[in-house]
Length: 253
Image (cartoon, rainbow, N blue to C red; front, side, top):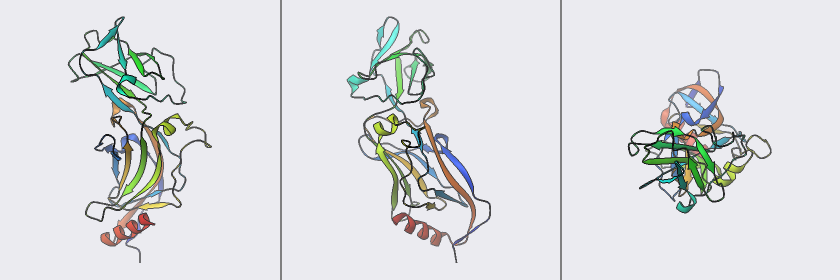
């Protein structure tokens, strides 16, 4: 007898960046930058080979006096050891505030509040970014959201707290490969590398992990893109501990 019963029709749901809450990143160490807890009375199934779209931005915030050039703010990300990635998505020409790969913001109150500004130019090789300073004439702080090219990204499932800490990784790639891939082409688009469909019981965690020296920003300002179709099935839990053990055994393979 199964430790649960299905009480509703399974349906496909797209997980997006907004589906996840921020995690706690440790720079340079594989750590969770975003997480989603499977709702109670829901079984979530990750489909084998499911298509994945992911463009995850990091943030750099200036320290000290801004570098002004012709009334604009110049930020040398390359000098900070940051490697930018330019995706293959269609983007408007600079200057623009609608570029999908890079976003600039200025503050005149030392970072208490921020206002988006046009990105005037980007040197993708050297990492020099120029922001329109006229939008916030008295700016004293700037930040840039960018697609990082250093480190790795994983998608993993974890059992609820209080268990033995089992987890399974379903996707693992470099951030540079992920962000530079043509994610609209089915031949080059990333997919979940699972050998079979994966069953996640209520309260299991789906996590996005990163090992990078870039600080990932999981919030609306970054305009992160994440899209992963999963199957949601309403269930009634009959034996919670048994259901957790069953799902955990599946994770272990």
